[in-house]
Structures are given as C-alpha cells and as structure tokens.
View 1 (cartoon, rainbow, N blue to C red):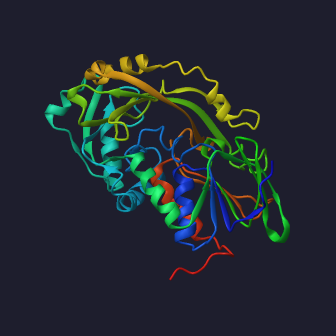
View 2: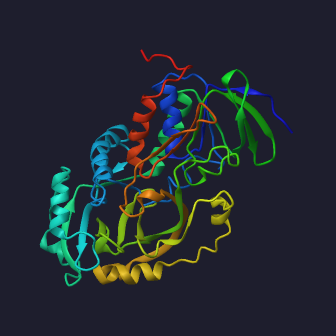
View 3: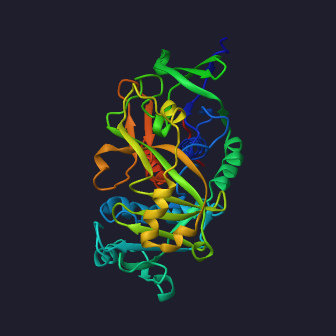
Length: 381
C-alpha cells in the first residue's frame, strides 16, 4: 500500500526530547510552516529521553571536561526558565569524593567547582554520618536538579499542534535520496507496511542510538560513535535517603537520584549499569539488540557496592529496571565530555544529524541551528 505523495518544509526524525524541541524550534523560531515529526514508537519521549537518570547537569559531573561543565553552567538557567514545571528541586543534592580510585581529590573537585562558578559547600555533619568515611574523603552539598519527563511530554502535547507541527507515529524513514528541484525524497514506512513518499528540502535526524541506522547507510555520521546497552535500576530508597540525590565520584562509582516521573530513585553504577558496549556498526541494529536482550538485572551488585560508601542503600527496595541503549562520541570516552554531535551530510544537502549527550545541551544544538540559513524560513516578527 502506498499513500499519496506529501511535501513538507522540514522533516524531523525521532520523537525524543531533541527531536521534539528541534521541531518546535523550526516552527516557532524559524517560522517554517510545514514541519513533520516522524517517530517509530506510538508515543513521544518514551525511549532514551525517559530511560535515564533525569539529571539536569550543572557542571559537577565533569571535572575532567571543563568545556562540558562550563556549557552546562551556561545552559541550565535557560532550561530552568524554559521548562519550569518539569524542574524538580525538592531534594538535597550531594557529591561525595571517594578516597581511593577517584580520578579527582576533594580539593581538586572543590577548586574545579569554584572555577566554573558552581555552588558548593561542605555537607553538614548529620549528612556526612550517612557515609562510610573510611572510603569517602569528603561530601559536598551542591545545586543540581532533576526533571520530570512526564511534564515535558505534556509540554510537547501542547506546543507541537500549537506551532503546526504534524506528528507521524509508528513510522520510520526507510529511505532518503536526492529528489527533484533540490529537494530530498523520503520514504516513510508505517509498522503495517504502508509507504508514504515525502519531499522536503531539510531533514533533521535526531534518532539518538539509531542515528546511523536511518535509511540504511544514507545518513551515517563521520564521527565514530560508541553504543552501550545500559541498566538503570528503579528503587524506593529508605527514609534516610528519600530526600537526597547522591553521586559518589569520580571513577567506578554510583549515583542515586530522584526520578520524579515515577516517584522513585534511580540507581546507576559506572561498572554495572553498562551491560556491554560496541562500536556503532550498520550491521548491529541497536533497537533489535535491545529487543532481544534478556535484561537480567545487576541491581544486587549495584546495591552491594554502593552500600560500601552509603550503607543505608542496603535498605532500598528494588522495583524494576529501565534498559536502554546509550550513545556517546568515541573520542570522549576518556574525558567524559558530552558535546553535541552536529553534522551536515554533504552528499545529501539539507540533511543534518544531531545527537545530544545531556538534556541541557539542547541549547548548543539551537546555537548551531541559529547559524544555518533555511530557504523556506521566514523572519520572526
């Protein structure tokens, strides 16, 4: 079955946070009239945008990547301003530095935070007593928030139709090729097998782990990517930890953060959350890899190791786990940097691939898009 041909001014592939935000940006800020968002799932924001720590990074996590930390410091106030209903601050955020195997000392971490202008102060004695101080050098109170992805989904439900963005669910882009009159020709295939032919001068690939798996090899990035099949455990923390967000760093340690969308905490561990890794390869479909994985939890190992540093973790109640494929730039594996990927495909003029490592650096993507000239955009009044 083949639907009628369609013409769009821009097509965005991927209904995660980046795809949704960029589709709205194109319509609202660049005044592009006909924007189509294509999402392979039956709903928006249900994959990597949902299956993460829900942390709004404020720089603390990246003492070995000054650029990433500094960009977070710039972007977070914008995010808090633009999505106030999604930002949750009703907890105390703590960063603890391990005495052994940490890549930074407490003194270095404190200096780093002050250097990027991030708030930091020693934790109160009552909080310090929660930690095993034989293994923890110092504990700091910081200013870091989390987001409620359900609130962002509600925002998307309002803003997409308000700005005239059409959404095609349960569909994927199966082919992209040069079309007539400097247009791109796309085939959008539904789960039922129906094919819709679309022409558009611009395509924005925001499919995250599937970024190199759209339309075969047509949109492969020049940048080498790494994939991780990861597990984030969802737990109900004991009373002593319910009002806290805890990160022990910087190395093979863990985080336990509030997850507002479910009223639980996430528990993730640098050693045990990644179940396996691979260099992104067109022959290995990340979606199929995840679909066929047995998803045997490693939560027991996460809890046991975390409890060495924060003993009350042992009293957490495990609920379930979120499994997802996480995508990072291979060049940043050693320094933990999380820059965006923004590539223009020279063999398909008008085609872009965009990947973000954190929710706050959507503004880095906006800045890149601000530099682009789109022939079918209008000046904003």
